[in-house]
Image 1 (cartoon, each protein chain N blue to C red):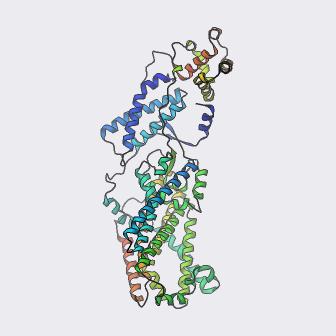
Image 2 (tube, one colour):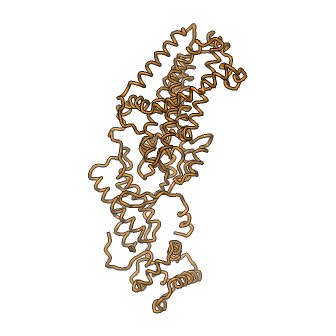
Image 3 (cartoon, rainbow over the protein chains, first blue to last red):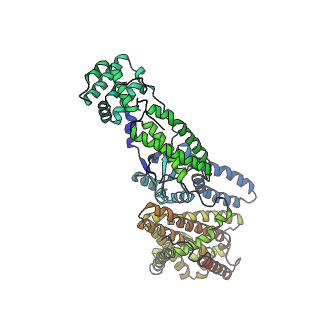
Length: 268
Length: 333
């Protein structure tokens, strides 16, 4: 991962949930913009449904257009609410717009929301939509640490981002036959101490993109990184450095940071 | 603990995938019920993957893997700790019919907020009525529509049948009324989040209009017409706005006294029941207003209209005060 990603991730809003077993996990919160887009999509879907059904209703009630109006007016009104409630309540906290934008409504304890919560947060829209274009709800979401509009606050719900996340790929360079740093536990410890997530990310990135770099640039970058690490980890045993190229130095450092060489370890 | 990420991933990946596929299957079920074998499997995988997450969080610098595991743990946690609705059949009609008894029960439990709504509306009525009575200039301000300002002309038109009445127009009219009234009522209930200030203002304004109209029509000798005009639907419409105010004040009280959000979440059920009940009342009121209230003498004698209104009021009172078990359920607040 790149450094810029690390920074972006640390500033993005998230909620940390502690389970009764003491497991902590973070959920990324959805921002007002993506929620607005999801809502616009939903509005388009509801209007299309209502108008499509309306044509059918008018055809059925062609002898009694007044009742056609009655059915469509009430239907449109009811569908406007029920659409959000039923989909969020029974379809994993997602309307169609939310699913397309990878958003999901959940209870603020991290559990699926209950149907009552779906009702409350959707009925409260009459207030959040005031005075126009969801101004009240938008200001409420921006001023809330959990990005909640008033409906969410009262219903005890949050909207989280749920982008599909494949299991990350493995890096083969952490796996080598022999890592001389492992023979010097003090070095490994110092290295781990010195490595901020940014620095570790930088080393990982430099190694991953080895073949993309021109030979000269690669030499320079590796030399600078290795020199920086050596200055952080002094005194450094001379016999270690003498044998190593800068690249091997970084590979060993990455092996310490991201992998573990001891074959006797038992996992699982 | 410092992890050998590669070996760790190779070993743990199978359980991550099996948890993922189990979760995919569970999440596609609307009622989210687990059978005992699934519960056991989920519990076991959850514990293992949560332990994996702990290791990755504290033993390795692997932000992407950590996010992936966090996502998995979050999903498994949600399935494991979520208590699905108790009645297995969400679509059972009996569950939905419960609202007819739950509504008056909730109404009685929260009667003091209803009383507050009545007092505020009453104050508005008094102000509106007194203003029209003693300050004729205020009529133009308080009564926006011409037919409210000049009852004589309005009554004349209505009684001459100059306004077209047909079942078709009435049907469309009733739909508009139901929709508008439910919107206003829901706003009153939702404005509870302004700690009740918005609810109070809305009720007060409603009261002012009501008081002003009543005094204006009575002053000019159309009291009976007004009663016959408003009573058949008003006996449902006005109480339902008051119940909306009741729900609003109930919400305001919840927000003012809350210590933990959990309390609000649990207690919002009461608010929902009140809103659902008043919506049902407003459907009836809208139909009465369109199909019955708009007919006047000589088509419908005023005495009959007033009698119908009075009978409705009696039924509503009996319903709200007597239906359901008295003191049923614990008083949440």
